[in-house]
Image (cartoon, rainbow, N blue to C red; front, side, top):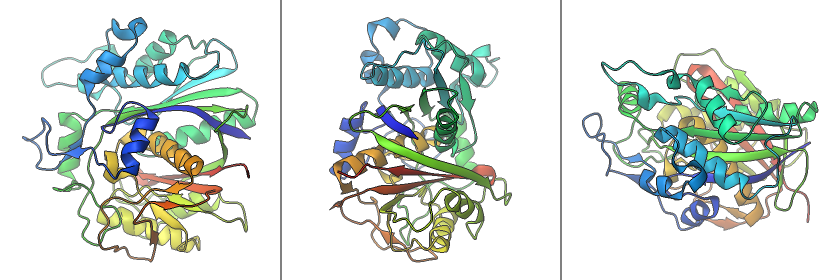
Length: 372
């Protein structure tokens, strides 16, 4: 059994978990039209404040030659480790980096990228900086990377390979990323509206999240009961219309005949993704369970999404609050869902986190809070 303990979130809504959660409770969105990518898109985007991030990096790390991506990873790790008693130099501690694009900002026309572009080099640089002695692992599997990294961490702990796994997920928005998503015509020209009948695309976001997964229970920890992943082998970018891969992931994650109190969906607000999730949830006989998406608050943060949204789900369970799925005016998906439309106080004992991505990949994890 593994536990989710110390954590940090960096998004457009703030640079620590409590600040981000407070903004979510107020219904604040960080998705904005004020960004430097107007030549590629008319869509709003959720960007972090890198001047603030540079200022907040502790003196120990502020002088390092960081890219913006590495700044996100370093600050999120720094803030998490300062609130934890773990020993990064222990042979029983592992660092996992979850990302889809990594140092994508180093890709510029006419300029030969340095070795820093390779994800293993980034992971090794960060691991050495923070004193990890075990070789780090990189998880790069489209937008399920964060959830998949947590599944891997949980399995390492269950098999007693490590007692502590530090998982950081991060991604930045660049010209390349914006142009790529625009080529799919998948971006909305207004802040995204997951599960709304008038949804017309996603909102990109950037950010970082760090979660410590441990065999040791701590105050305010949540159990990571288990998880599974499956690929529906459907399409290079489009999800299975029946939700086959997501259904398989969740069905292999859920215990039989146990109540689920809340589903944190992937909820990108693209027409096909939200319909696919609605089918999968109905096939699991969970259409009555409250479901939401957090992406209308801080956008789709790609390889960081699974980590950030799992932390928000953890805080939702600890606070006993269902946070509303921002942007939903008229619910409208192919199969019926119980979409959370207003913040609600509710005892949350067992929650399911779903994730899907390009290439037909899908993943799910189950979180549980001890009674009392």
